[in-house]
Length: 91
Image (cartoon, rainbow, N blue to C red; front, side, top):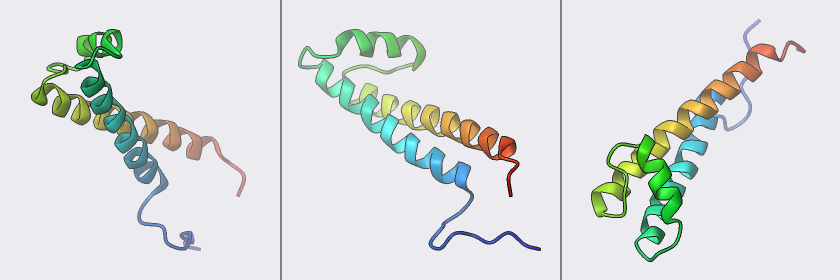
């Protein structure tokens, strides 16, 4: 028997969760870079700048941080939800 999709679902849960967290983390990274240009969250931007190449307070750095943040958040949520679905054996 085929699995039923939830009403209004637009794809597999790991992809939807990954997209949601990717958008949130990408926005947070971009916002941190913008606030660091005003003196706030500078240590966080420096820390993430060690991991996200090109991340910084300039326009290119903000865009790079948003892209890296989206990818990082997407991959993390996708893996967590995928593992959760594999471990969820109750049907």
